Image (cartoon, rainbow over all chains, first blue to last red; front, side):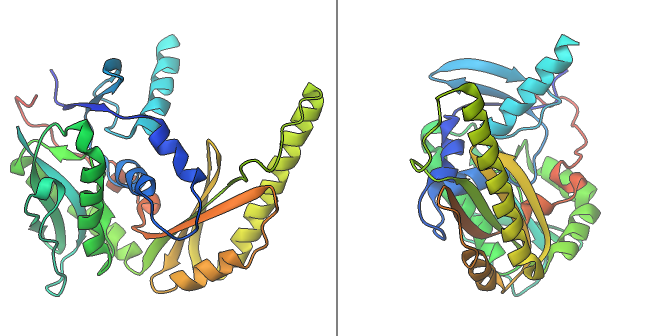
Length: 85
Length: 227
């Protein structure tokens, strides 16, 4: 039984890494906004399919929170470690 | 398919104005449970990835509209619920936890700074593996010392500071009293930065890093037959 939602997005992981590399000190960049609205705050449980270049790379199960790509990648590694045991 | 997008929760007060529109230009609405008010709007789901940046700005605009007036608990942009019934369950089941966090954080904002290697300043020493590792260790110790110096410089302004290692540097989150953001910026700027490091400040943001775990991942009773 599936109580979650599936979300299909095509996001580049680099969008969330480059925020540290921008110049200036006080302006709010689009990348900072993206980082915060996707990666900070309340998360609601669901399921997520991440697509890169039109190819579904991963499917995260119901117990993985709906989250940004960066956080999702960390979750995937944790799931893989648990699966290998 | 229409879904319900949650923006943020805050303590209800009649003087707080609401944003007119949110993501996809849809009208932002409020739902109350006791003293807790939660912003939401209907959205077409799933989002078109081509419009994600625009949606992010719209979402940020709606949350910021409230955050300028009071403390908020932000949801993440992708926090969509099946329908209004699910939203009602969410706010009813989590009201106390949300209000507890809002009360705890009501006088604070989150300021951030990131410390990272200055681009192009330090060339990797590839003469040997040992030399490379020694250079890395030295750079790491220098960055740690700088983070400590920064933390000391802002200590009197912060209720709490959390430090997290990111892929390209060190990310620090400070819980600062609302209205003292400029003092925080000045305190950060007053600390001399080593040539091989750079820093970047941002804020004020909602205090998302300091939410309690029950608020960060709220419980929602699954609805029978949901897909």
